[in-house]
Amino acid sequence: DVVMTQSPLSLPVTLGQPASISCRSSQSLVYSDGHTYLNWFHQRPGQSPRRLIHEVSNRDSGVPDTFSGSGSGTDFTLKISRVEAEDVGVYYCMQATHWPITFGQGTRLEIK
Amino acid sequence: EVQVVESGGGLIQPGGSLRLSCAASGFTVSSNYMSWVRQAPGKGLEWVSVIYTGGTTKYADSVKGRFTISRDNSKNTVYLQMNSLRAEDTAVYYCVRAAWDYWGQGTLVTVSS
Image 1 (cartoon, each protein chain N blue to C red):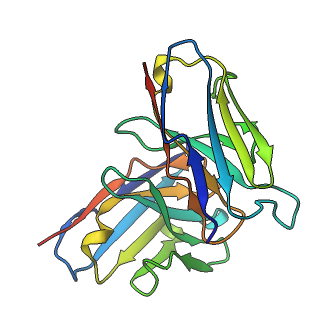
Image 2: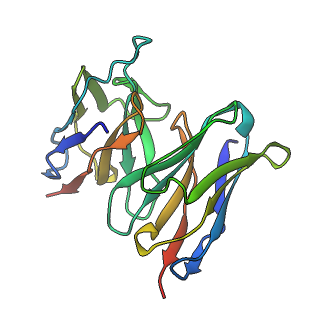
Image 3: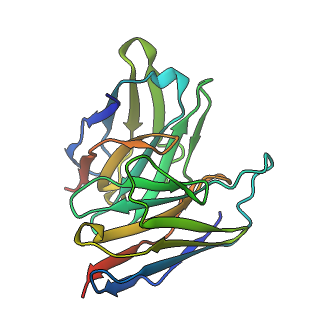
């Protein structure tokens, strides 16, 4: 199975400051069709996960442009340019290139 | 409006069976991959199963041979039949359109005596 390793696991951030989460995979996530099926999700306390980013860098509808995704191969990053109060919760990366689908352990973002 | 709504969770004894339902609206389940993902209390996300448009199914090793995913096109509903339940199957189970863009609110399954 592809292991997805996120860091840090805990991320205290001051409001208005940037934040960055790393996600590394144990194998390349480039599929045979040339696409890289790496998604980012945000889960607020007591809610279902919500997809933020698909295929590495494509922001979903309604996601603020303060969120951006980047990376390639085995190394990916989610960045928040200015953290707001509603950004608290847990962030997960997920790969859908290889079976079985696997998630990172999650990164908990909190406001300092 | 696109929506997925799970139901069928509850408290069940070890070794028992439960069937979860996922009713979709705003899209057709038979035209989409549909997955189940679970989240144990206080833990991360774990993919459980998928059903492809053609009906092919896949399972995580942790549930293979015990869980069965299926769908009823006439009801636009996906199911997860869970047999031989274990304490470690305790989790919130989410139904997800496997473009990963629409998630249900989840249904809690608790396996305990």
